[in-house]
Image 1: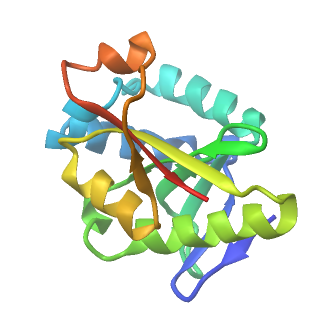
Image 2: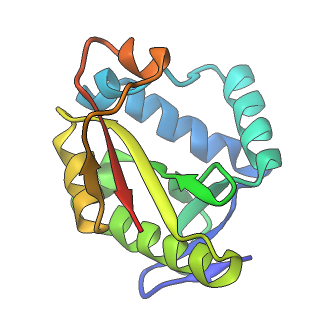
Length: 165
């Protein structure tokens, strides 16, 4: 499966892309946004293994600029009939609408080809960029939820779940 948008190409993550994805991991680890998520591996060995696991899962998708092979970000949609949405883009590509363009294309593809109708995103409510992206993807904040211990433990941030149907 390969999805092409006006500016992007999205395809299942491949083990051979581990160097590009390591660059994303290292960029994220040095960014202010690191407080909003769990740590990502920054060594070659651990990044290579993480990319292998993600590529084999079938839930991770690399995002490249159209006509280029360098990975500028990735999306993940784990789950079966309800998919959780996650993403990471290199800071060089922030603020250009790439995450929204890629996520919309993947959501449409998963809906049309697999009949997936419900998408959720667990995020720290303080993470304004992710919260706004969830809202632009027509996500509505779900309230009154009991959060799992891993999300509760995420640096004492207020967790939230956004859902689109």
